[in-house]
Image 1 (cartoon, helix red, strand yellow):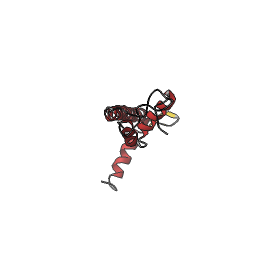
Image 2 (tube, one colour; image 1 turned 45 degrees about the horizontal axis):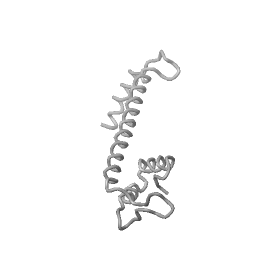
Image 3 (cartoon, rainbow, N blue to C red; image 1 turned 120 degrees about the vertical axis):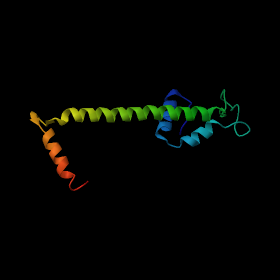
Image 4 (cartoon, helix red, strand yellow; image 1 turned 45 degrees about the vertical axis):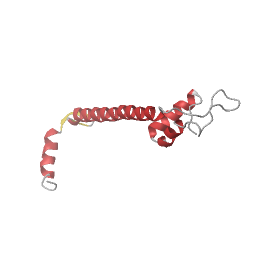
Length: 115
């Protein structure tokens, strides 16, 4: 179950939020206010009430993490394109064989079938 009781479970819960696994339910559970929760539970120093700022935290967290993940995916894609453009000029283990002219000829020939 998702909770913030320990540091380890907090990290697991934050990863669960990143992956989108019932994050709306966790957000609403963290925003529960009295009389729907207990302020102090017997045997514990605190209760199971949340904060009214939970939706702000969760939405900001989702926005920032998804923006970072999107940047990582785009950066990886661009890096892969640059690498393939660099390697496209040579053919496999034969670095002196140029294939640019053959690729252009293939592209021109393929346009006859797929304009």
